Amino acid sequence: MAINLSINLNKVALLRNSRGATNPSPRVAAEACIAAGVQGLTLHWREDNRHTRVEDVHDLCQLAKDSGVEFNLEGDQREELTALALEIRPTQFTLVPVTPGEVTSDHGWDLPSQQDVVAPIMERINAAGIRSAIFMDADAENMTHAAATGTQRVEIYTEPYADAFGTPDEDKEYERLKACCVEAVAHGLGVNAGHDLDLHNMPRIGQGIPEMLEVSIGHALLADALYLGLGETISRYLKVCSGQASPAPKTC
Image 1 (tube, helix red, strand yellow):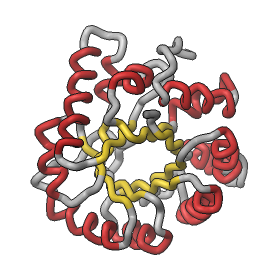
Image 2 (cartoon, helix red, strand yellow; image 1 turned 180 degrees about the vertical axis):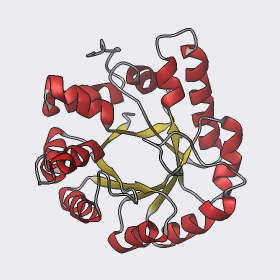
Image 3 (cartoon, rainbow, N blue to C red; image 1 turned 30 degrees about the horizontal axis):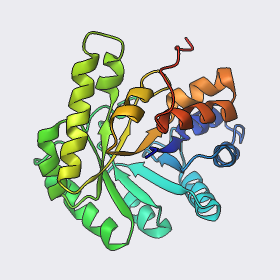
Image 4 (cartoon, rainbow, N blue to C red; image 1 turned 30 degrees about the vertical axis):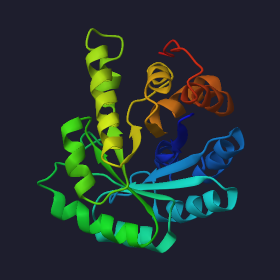
């Protein structure tokens, strides 16, 4: 079964914000992604508004609903974000821990010590009929604690695997990721993944981890699109998500 591809459009918003105008447009990019056949759109709304803004979330969530694709809203535990999710009803709400000053997400929730932060939000999201997910490190032993939060899915943080790809540590990190996915499913959880996945390292996941339901890819895909064009890039990513492609050479 193919892995669903959800494209994170934060970097389009970041580029737009750098000029203080409206170009490039996350909505136009989202329309191109949908036309190219993606299964979902992702936005991570950060408190500092450095890329995605609340109006982007409203706009792309409605576009996704109108277009019949999924919309995944990501973010931390602040009340305004949970309230926004309950208002707009995305397909999925992914709760992600944030460290002040971080450039990008770089760790999963520390469970069970943060159970009292995560579980009440999952309860509210589930009660609203929104699919819930939490960002977790690739640690099989922690899937027990993840399931105890009430989340329906986990999104596995894949940077360690991506960093190890092509090095002597690749097999170790791949097996750690795979074991985590297997354990998550054993605890009744659906499995998503994201962070630094690209055309080079995704084929092994697409071919070897049938438990994976969805990947959220932003930075690498949009970087590839600078060289290949957005439509061609999405076509290649969909192919690796279906398990039909071999690793591609890096573009830089």
